[in-house]
Amino acid sequence: MTLTNQTVDHFRTTLLWPLQIRPGFYGDHVQPIRTLLKGSGQLSDWKLVDDEFTQNPADFQERHYKEFITFLPAVQRFLYGEGRSKGREPDDPALPAPVEVYRRHDVKGLRVWVLPDSEPVFLRTAHLDLYLFMDEDVVLLNLEVWADALPLPEVLDLLYRFGRAYPAGWEDSGQGHHNLSRVEVVGLNDEVLAVSDGAEKERYLHFVCEHRAPFVASQWRFLLRPLVLDNTDEPGVLRFRQVEFYRMPMMVFLAMKNPRALTREDFIHITQVSHVQPGDQIAPSSPILQNLEKEYFYDRYWTNSIEGPNTRFICTGNAMMVVGESHSQYFMDAERGILAQFRHQHFVVFMIAHFHRAALLSFSDFLSEAINDLDTRNPVSVRRFKRRIWATFQNFLTFTHRYWFHQVSELGHVRALFEMTRTHLETDDLYEEVKEQVGGMSDYLDSDSEREQSDTVIRLTVVTVVGLIFSVVTGFFGMNFFAMAEESIWVKTTYFVIATSVTIALLLLTAARSRQLAEVIDSLSGNKPSAPPKHRSADKRQL
Image (cartoon, rainbow, N blue to C red; front, side, top):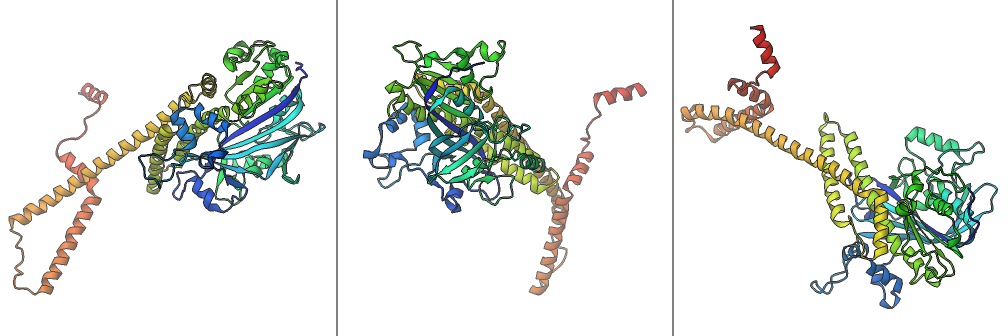
C-alpha cells in the first residue's frame, strides 16, 4: 500500500512509559518513592520541577491557566495540590499535589537511524520527565521529542519503530525486528551519552534465559538512571520492571500543509502505526476497517473543506494523535492553540488514563506475587502475606478515593478523548477485576481472623474447664492443705514459688494440648459428627 508522500512540516511525539518501582510500598523496609529519590543522593540528573503555582505570579503563563481550568475540581487537586485556605493558619503551607514531576536537562536529543542505510534524523528533546505518585509504586517516564520537514512515510516508519523497550526478534543481518537501527542519546555539548544495543542478540537471549524477564535496551536504561532494571546485578536502591506491553504508549502531533489530501488508507496506517508497519497491506475484512471512523476518530473539528477547521483527533488507547494544517495559526499556536492543548490538556488526559491502567496492573501483579510467596506451613510467611494483603487493601482504597476518576472535564473534546482512551484501554473492566481480587483477599483475611478468634475461644474454654476442676477441689478443702501460719517467711515464699510454678506449668500444658482436650470434651458431650447420608443408607442396607 502506497502512502501519500506529503511533507510533515512539524512532527512531535510524546512517549509515556509506565513502570513498576521495586520494591514498591509493600515490603518490610519500604519508604515512599519520593523519600528514596530525595534521600538517595544519586539523582544528580533529575531535578524536581518547580510548581508554577508557587512561583512569582508574573511568571504564570496563560497556557498554565487554561490547563488548570480545563479540569474538574477533584482533578485539579490531584494534579496541582491545594493552596492556602482561609480556614487555616496563615503560616500553614499549601497542600502538595499527590503527583510530583522530576526532569532531566542534560539530554539535547536523540539521533536515530530508521534503517541501517538511511540518513540519521535528529529528534530534539522538549521534555524528559519522571512522574511519581504518592502511595503508588508506579512511575511514568515521559519523553517528548520533535523535528521539522520530514516525509510522511518516514515519519510513520519512525513512529512504528520508536518507543520499543527491546527488540521483538532479529533478522539474519542482526538488525532487531521492528526496532530503529541505531539510537544515540546526545548531550548538551553534542556528545554521545548512550548508544542502543538492539543488535546484541546473545545478550538479550542470555538475560531472558537466566532471569525469565526481558532485558531493556541500553538507551532506555540510561535515561532512567539512577533507576536500574530489577533483575540485573547493577546496584541501586530504586529498581524498575515492566508492567505493560513493551510497546510504549505515545502521543503524536502531525502538522502538514494539506491534511485533506490524506487518503483513508493514510489514516488507517496513522491509526495503526503502533501495530502495522507503514506500507503493509491490511485485509479489507479486517475488523480495524469496519468501524474505523466511529471507534477511533474524533471529528468535531474536521470539516474537510478549504475554510476549515481541518483538525482530526485519533485515539486508539495506546496512541493519541492529532493531524492538522501547518499554515493554521491556531493549530500551531504553542500558547493558546491546538499545539498548546496537545502538550498540556491532552497530555494530562492521556497520562491519567495510562496511570490508572498501570496502577491497576501493578495491584494485580502484587496480589499474584503475594500468593506465590505464601507458604501456609511457615508462620513467618503467613504473617508476611497478611501484612502485604492489608497494605494492598489500604493502598487500593487510597487509589480509589484519590486517583480514580470517571470524568476529568466538562469540555466536550477533552471529555471525549478521555472517554475514548479509557474505553480502548478497558480500565473499567480492569478496575472491577482488581476490586474483586482485593475484596476476595480481604474476605479471606476476615474469615481467617474469625477462625483464629474462634480457635482461641475454644482453647480458653478448655483452660477454664481444667481450672474450674482445680478451683472446685481446692474450694472443697478450703485451701488449707498445709498449716503454714507459723512458718517463716522464707518457707512461705518457697511454697508460693513452687505452687505458682506448678500452676503455670499446668496451664501452659493445658493450653498446648487444648485442641486435643477440646476433642475429648466434645466426644464426651456426645457431639460426634454424624455419618454422611450416603453412609447411613449403606448401614441400613447392611442391616
